[in-house]
Amino acid sequence: MTVDPTAAAPTPEHCVTALLDAYVLGECTSAAADAIETHLGRCVSCSVDAAQLALTVPPPAWSTVGPPAAPTADMDLTPGGPGSLEAVLAAALAVRPAAPGTPATGSTAPAQAGPARPRGPRTPTHGSRAAALDRLLVELAPAHWGRLAVAGWSVRELVLHLYAVDGLLLAALDGAGSDAGADSDAPGDLGRPDEDPVARTEAVLAATREWSVEQVRLRWFERAGLVCAAVADATRASGPSVVTAGGWTTTPADHLTARAFETWIHTRDIAAAAGLAVPDPGEGELHTMADLALRLLVDPWTAAVETAGPAALTVTLTGPGGGTWSLDPSGVHEWQGDAGLVESGPAEGPARTTGPASGPLTASAITVGAVTVGAVTVGIVPFCLLAGDRATVDAVATRMEGDERLAVELLTLAPSLAGP
Image (cartoon, rainbow, N blue to C red; front, top):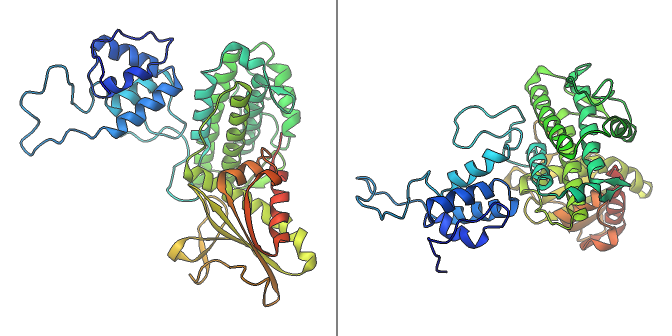
């Protein structure tokens, strides 16, 4: 593609896709670069495109004696110059904040308050899911906020629902603490940890009728960051090991994963209401959410199938973030390569090897000893959408082996995890 480095500078109101090639190569004028960077801070689509293009451009191959003596005048090859990844990210972050729990670009300072992000299946996810929703919300036209999204709630009301339920977790983690300021949303602000999430949402909706959509977005995003910080404090042993919020008792990290799961599902709801599309979470996030879903499903699944005797089911989730889990009356166990069978547990708990690395249970026969066995293979994204009640069993492509009843019971139970 041939680019014209003298092309007129774009206006912030129009996408700059046609100019991104020149921008990432440093071949546009300073005025055009300034206008493009301003636009990137406002436009999700163009900022993603620019970041992806910047990643495909290799850094300059400096020799051991330094950079070339005389680079061309119209090419800025320095790492921080126009078109570099640093410039793209800096332009975006100048307008939109980073996800809760992530360090500032180019900074060696500790990350802002929020959970650490270890590699592997237990990667905390709420900060990035909140950031993804925030970037969607800033793209919405005023009319989009009033559109019906889900459960009879508009887009505006759905964001306030997330705000309300985040408050219940904050109340559980902080005890009687509150993030209320002079413009508190309602008496008590956070609500009681044992309060019903729908009832709390209705109370918040009634108390925030005068909030503008921008105030709704900012207050929700602020609270999402507070939730990340509170969970980080709890997982550093300065808080409770388990908490009860919204009628559910588990570890703070599992609560945070559940908040990420719901935020992702409602991000899709909001995007659909606005006629937009959003990318799926990253593979670490999907794995963490799927692992939580399987751990929540194992007890009701065992109760549903045990009338016919002991049973075991191998679940293989395909796609980025996928894996293989075994479900049986003793719990959920994940196969992790040479590590063998590893027991899934609380998100911040240690993994424990419970068997030899001989491979997951197969369903070549319907019974192994006195245990009925089965296996099911399904895509990880469709499985998560099924658990979020955004897909139906009939619409999800699966491959079943052995006793299919075991797989059908699991898939049928999955939507029961979803709330409003």
